[in-house]
Amino acid sequence: MTARKSYRTLSGTSRLAGVMGWPVSHSKSPRLHGYWLAKYGIDGSYMPLPVEPENFQAALISLRNLGFSGVNVTIPQKEMAMPECDELSDRARRIGAVNTVTFAKDGRLLGDNTDGFGFIENLRQEAPDIDFTSGPAVVLGAGGASRAILVALLDEGSPEIRIANRTRARAEDLVREFNDPRLTVIDWPVSPDVLSDVSLLVNTTSLGMVGQPKLDIDLDGLPTSALVTDIVYAPLITGLLQQAKDRGNPIVDGLGMLLHQARPGFHRWFGIDPEVTQELRDFVLSPD
Ligand code: ATR
Image (cartoon, rainbow, N blue to C red; front, side, top):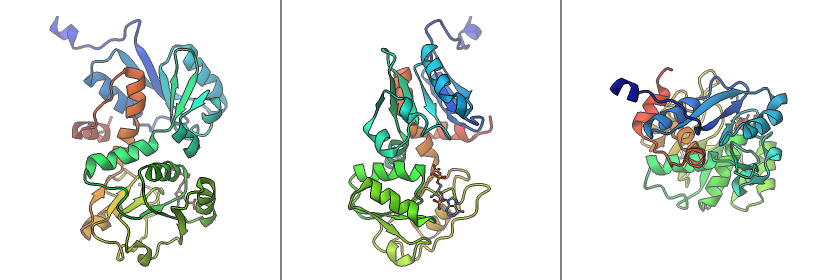
């Protein structure tokens, strides 16, 4: 009897969700949502959904027709999901990509982007004293992740955000598009003097990730009070974070952004705003 109780099975009313991408085998989302489903004893399932880009639209509609509650969408389908949605959240529209789709009861597809939310919530949890309005931020990179973080930082009241990108034109395009006087473009590589009054430094590039070149940056000009964070979480302590830590700066690693960005979807689909804990971090990082 006790043994039977320890099994969690699906019922006829299970709620279903998953992550669509191509490939999707690298995704940590099934493990992450699976942990929360077990922790909260929810009658539901979250599965990897490998979908080739040419089948994306048909697959999305099929999942709705199959009664799924929603899906996360990962590369390269985050931009493809935008035009398929009947309604977009303000932040998804501004970021220009969707990572969370909810199938409403009336069949409409509601698109959201929770990457910026995940970024902010991670910093709030790991550095509770953070005040986004306290000084300028420097953001390295001008890709999709950068867009989400810029929108979030602007919404948090950041007084000035300096963007540095290898391909300067991409950063300039972003500034033009967002059309907010708080955004400026600075040189890549970053010179130490533009760091002297900065309170937050963020790496949104893939530099420093396992298998990628290292990020070369001279932190000499950065106040030691500035918080340094990286969206790369493999390795957890990137070269940038180690360099910052060694000179006394507070640091926050990028794993929490991944964990927190998953919360809104889980909440909508399964009815609970789940907790990000050290046990979850260890579980997501441990081998399958
Ligand atoms: P994501 O959606 O993860 O942000 P992306 O849109 O491909 O991915 O953006 C990758 C970011 O990392 C860009 O800012 C890119 O700079 P470019 O716009 O110049 O390509 C940056 N990046 C990647 N490899 C880099 C490298 N070797 N040196 C400098 N920047 C690099």
